[in-house]
Image 1: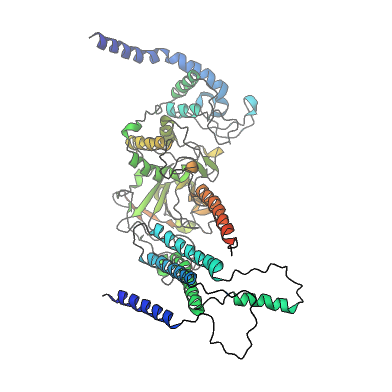
Image 2: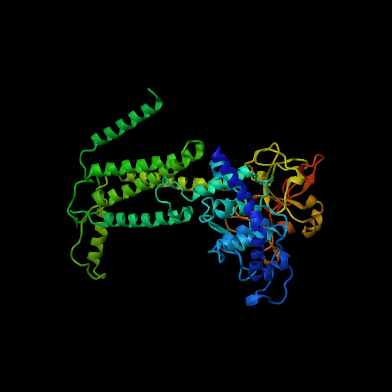
Amino acid sequence: MPISLLALAAVSFAAASPAAGADGLAGRGKELYSKSCASCHGPDGRGVTTQGAPTGAGNVRALGPSLRGVGALSTDFYLRTGYMPLRDARDQPHRRKPPFTDPQISAIVAYVASLGSGPAVPRPHPERGSLSRGLQLFTEHCAGCHQIAAVGGVVTGGLAPSLRHATPVQVAQAIRIGPYLMPSSSARQIDDRDLDSIVRYVESTKHPEDRGGWAIGHVGPVPEGLVTWLIAVVALVGVAVLVGKRARP
Amino acid sequence: MSSGARWLVAAILLVLSRRRRRVTPVAKDEPEAAPTPARVTAPELPDRRAENVVLLLLGLGTACAVAFVVVYALDRLPRQTQLLGLSLGLAFAFLAAASVVVGRRVVSQHEREEPYAEPEHLEEQEAVVLVAQESASRFTRKKLVVLAAGGAGTALGAALIAPALSLGPAFDMESLYRTPWRRGVRLLDEDGRAYLAESIEPETFYTAYPEGAPREQLGAPLVLVRLEPGRLELPAERRGWAPGGILAYSKICTHAGCAISLYRKPLFEPTEPRPALVCPCHYSTFDPATGGTVLFGPAGRPLPQLPLAVGERGELRAGGHFSGPVGPSWWGVRLRGAR
């Protein structure tokens, strides 16, 4: 009885606390937004879709999509991966240490999410997914760019990042958003169960099982061939030297 | 007793009887007409054992090379790739071993220790020629060894040339133009369900297969994308090929025949490259908005487009044939269209 009461109290506290602090959080987020995001994404997240004169701090050439309706899902992804803020709007964002602290990120996410109704941060459950289904889906939808070992690759005009440091939540977010040149998939194309399977597969690529022994970066036949040739050529030279020695009379 | 075993016994008897007849080893029955020059190297007894080893190795090399051709031709053995590698590798290894044994055991190992004289000294030159000639004098069955080496070389050559047949049909060009797509064929997804036009979303890509045809055919797989109808710049004769902005292209790259598995889709177009279908092998990049024209990369001709139509129940169907032959280019690719 006391335990369930305690649990009830905890639940009500958890439910109440974001509501109570929401305005404050979003307010702080708005402040941070105006400082670091507004020059490209416009005041109130309306976006800047035509190129104007350099504006904002550090002569940023402002150009950026509207953030109304992208929700917490996108904002959380772009800030926690360090993709945003971007120095030049034409650059491809790259993973780095986020310049904001965790509370600052939460504040900006709360503010952008309040601009329009958008999707919340997904909660994938990789343990519910199927590894073999994940491999199949990853092969079909992702491996073309990210490689089957999820080590990243190239598409003309852009880089497909390695997924080594992508958290399960970030993988799920990226599939829904389609950052930069990546296609995006709605729940109609890849439902949440399939999403769990893909995330489970991506997690498994972080600790691959190398039955062959030497993985050589898990990037396929090119480095494997190089190693084979370097070792084989040395061995062949050795054999040639042995054969070339005159037989003792 | 099977005929194979009989042949084996006959061959063994032949070798043994030939062996018994020849007792005197060195060439004795040569004509006396030309005076035999004095030997330079000390006469050595023929090493029949080493010679037999050479014959055995050449025979094994031949057998392995033939085995390669057989494995290649059968085409349905388990672990075929490993067997192909093993047979070809062993063929090379046996031939190499035969050369080594010839070099080290059969050919005379005589060395001239004094430095070679000036080239104008004729006798010295002749002596060198004689050494070369005499080094082969220990072969008793020279013709057989040469024949065996020739056979091994021919078999190995055949083994190396045989895979060229896989480059494509040698005689029946018609199959290169044929695809399973005709007017009215439904587009199915991976799991065999028909694609509905309204289920195709923008910003992503789909793979489609023809209903009632094997998926492994080169002309079967399609890549589907949906673009804004207003942004399409298709050639005039392809009016109506993309209902609702849904475009279907062959999934097989026109450069080397890889599957187009990359779709470059900008999230924010003003700052990012335009949408494109990209082949992962050599990064040939095709523009879906303009009818599959090449934007970048080694592909020499556009990606063939399939006209689409929407059926009564909203399902996607083929509206006709591809705009051109599917798959990597070959000598006759521009002669006529796909069918």
